[in-house]
Image 1 (tube, rainbow, N blue to C red):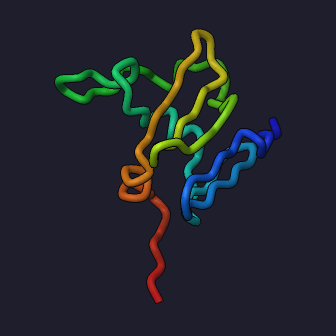
Image 2: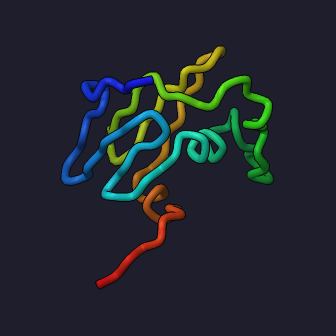
Length: 105
């Protein structure tokens, strides 16, 4: 699947680009499977225990976004699912929870 870059709406100095399996924010990669598995909303997490409610291994296909945008310092992903699902991730949360090795000069 090719993501139409017209859906990518950068905000401020945050760079955003995407391909078929991941996108980058501020030079850090975030894979769609990881993002969908770590959705922060109440449909995906128990409000009291923070336990995952959605088992990504039960999905029939790997997660794919319909659209990706940045708004109010949040990454918003509308997932290609039935029923529809929207994930909202604060950019600061993403950058604090990136699993990419952080090289320092």
